[in-house]
Image (tube, rainbow, N blue to C red):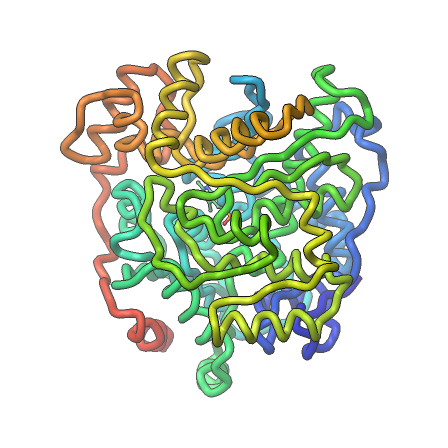
Length: 491
Ligand SMILES: *Cc1c(COP(=O)(O)O)cnc(C)c1O
């Protein structure tokens, strides 16, 4: 197995090198040359732990690492940092199965991959004999930033930079990032939105002069965003694991198809679901749920990607994105690895913020259903799920459930359905409280306490004492100051 750029110009490289580089030199994303099949049929995996399945899947995508080494990474990543022994428990509510991906340290699903990425990165550095310090640049819509900071804090041989839209994240998300400890952590708010941050980070990655100058000082740039294959592959694991669990619970027959619903922003999580399908998990439909920034809904329904629209700030801020990076990988696979086609589409996206895919790709999109929910529908969904089912979800997961309801209305499909539950309701407590009719709070921290008083649902450990933590990162910069912020901190 080797990795190459979706845009074709890079040579074939091994997984360690792809993890270290993060993004290809031609601005493309690294993709594996094939998607491996699972060794065992899902029903033969019944009884395996999250760790067993993770070791199996990661070994297939990262064959130049020893299985023993991967086992160590997996065991160090998925330990008692997760508050649930199962790592990813399933809860049934409202006619669907919620796959709870938020029991890690930062209370959002980004912990699933960012708990292990630093271990994989350290291993990759050793394998490649890389002597430079890895400087990780991360653009975040709120959740990746904190999870990456937790993961990389004080990891030897790394420096971590996080850029978040100053007005585009929840207060709790902001406080989580600005109170981060660790000598190698650097956090900046920017005047601008997530797309601005992501575009500038990608530009810096591809600036040859900058890379050369940093290299001379002993630094190599890498990414903790889902453009890094080392983050994407660990996300496949929970889809396979949850499918096996549904068999174990007697909810589905051994080879029965399921639907998978994913509240989607940068298209990383749903792409991991697609990879799980390619590996052998039987999927009837991938349901892509967006908020009012519904570029992806329009794209899946028409084959036209049009980012020429204003970005709206919503109550599901981690999905306030107009340019979804990982879609590039799906297009690559659906076009049978046609690099030239991808190069042309992405060039058009850069110049016109617009493209239309060919009929071959359109046909591939038929496995996907797409819809969106606005802020009011999101709140209404939280209310209904709590009042009728006693089940608390966050705003992003509510978007997923609402779109699933629309899907059922439209199709009458009764396939067993798995919904990616991407964050704890406490992370967006102010909005959740509004949904439940709980009186408005002074701030996010009081909102957390009120929500706890009303629901009795346990508060995630990492959010409990957040308001008492010292603010360590106050930086607020313009987007064209990101590079100098990096250079200043890399001496
Ligand atoms: C990041 C995030 C998403 C979107 O996931 P993508 O992989 O970017 O599509 C959805 N919900 C929450 C809570 C998130 O943090």
